[in-house]
Image (cartoon, one colour):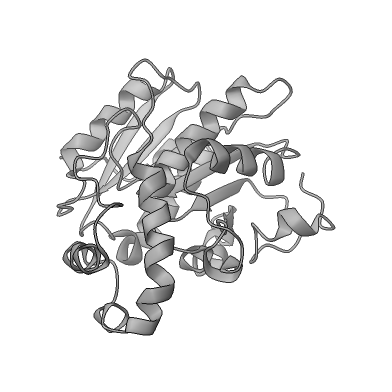
Length: 263
């Protein structure tokens, strides 16, 4: 497991102090997001005998002064070396939107590395399948156009979008994340050996729920899709339902799993 005295690695896990002995779920945020999005999940997860570990990416949240990483290879290498290198498992990775793509790329890399422990499960949320390129690249847009796109997506509060000083800080972070997301996709033949559970929002206009079924092609194990009420950021309202499914999967309790929703 991770050692508490690894100061550099600890920057990736700002809300995690030691270990609880419970199965861990490393949680990766959406483009422009930060670890604090998952901080409220930590206590709720413990009641389900799961340890949620929010991951802080370089240049985000508590790490705003760290250099941004805009390439998938560099991000995956850093996560494998500085966060998961000493993890002996069983553990899982959960990612939303951009975080789902990173989670998959990390799982692929851990399966390739001699002596590494791959995740026992992968949870992907609000994301196109790993081999599907993003249909509408945004990272090269001028600031005003990018801000308009963010407004249309609905994930950024209007008061932040209207705050010029905050957006001066946030736009480079979002642009780097979008660059990472939009310039990477996996091979169509790519597979991981762990089961994948996908979550989708029924009213998601960015990643329509029916498209997430393609994640089934990226695992040689089982696949399940859970569709929830809400848009692309359905995790905000559906946290408890998602955590219940995560816990049921990690503890292999089929009776606790909500029935799959129709897409």
